[in-house]
Structures are given as C-alpha cells and as structure tokens.
Length: 203
View 1 (tube, rainbow, N blue to C red):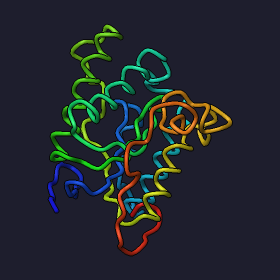
View 2 (view 1 turned 180 degrees about the vertical axis):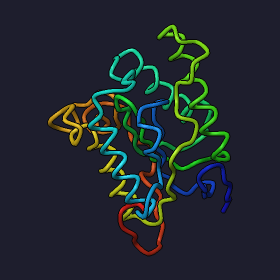
View 3 (view 1 turned 135 degrees about the vertical axis):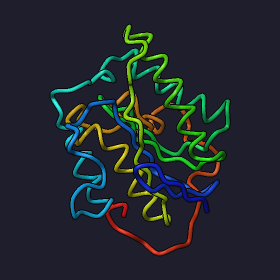
C-alpha cells in the first residue's frame, strides 16, 4: 500500500478499488474545501458534493455535451487503451467527476494523465488556453470491501438523479449507469472482491 501527501493525505494500492472525485477550478468558494471543520473526511465529502450538485453559480462547463463527451471518452481511453486502471463506475457531472476504479499504475500518474489531457482539450474547446480548468487536488477514498464498493457505485451512478438532472440513473448520458441499457459493458469479471470490514460514509 502506498501513501503520499499533498494538501490532503492519499492512500492507494495497485489493483484495489478506489473512489476518486475532482471538480472544476473555482467551483466552490475558497473557504469550502474537502476535509474542512470537525467532520470526518467522508462526511465532509458528502456535504461538499451536495454543494457541487446544488451550485447555480461558478463554472458549469461540463453541462456542455461536447465537453462531457470528451471527458467520458478520455475516461474510457485511459482504461482500455492506456491501461491505467480497470474502470468500474463513473459520472461526469456539470462541475465535477466521480470515478470508481482499480489503479494499474501509481495514482499520481493516473490522475495527472487523465486530468492533464482533459484540461488541455477542454481549454482548447472553450478558448481558455492557459487557464486552470480542474481544481488541483482530488478527493480519494480506498474502498475496503464489497459492500462499500456497491454503495459507492450506486452513489456515483445516482448522482445525476440526486442533482435533478434526470429522473432515472440510466437516462444520464455521461455515466456508467447506461452500461446496463446498451452502453459500454462494465468489463470482464465485475468488481473485485475484498474481504474486509465495512465502513460508513466513505470514511
């Protein structure tokens, strides 16, 4: 298992599922950051994710179908062509991205590659070259068991419903919920099986 720290601590293991989230630059007020206050990291994440879902101000670039499609394609490309990870679930929201994956390369390499190429392409599409696109740091949570894996997968795939973007998860074009209705297959073998104790609220 590998540990590294930037502003937040990060823990990952090659092959073990991890829940990743990152957001657009300046999508929340500067005083609202992951891990703020007396909440656990999981509770803080859920609170801030709700703020992102409810945001009506700040950048919402990923509402644009062309950008959401580009990021969705990059997510699949980095899984199936670059083999940086096994992809289990994802959702591209108007101002943030959720991923559930099993890394096959070091996590910093994985996030730098995916965030870097999507930021470059998005800034070209928006004529914002040279501007910050993604918030620099990402939230990550190492998945501890099968029960938590399924809870996080459902959390990701139902995020568009909670955000009132669709009424059924399968209706949302830029998430893995469509895989069950004729979209891209979830992948061979299904989710990994991890026999460990359960936790609540991702932290």
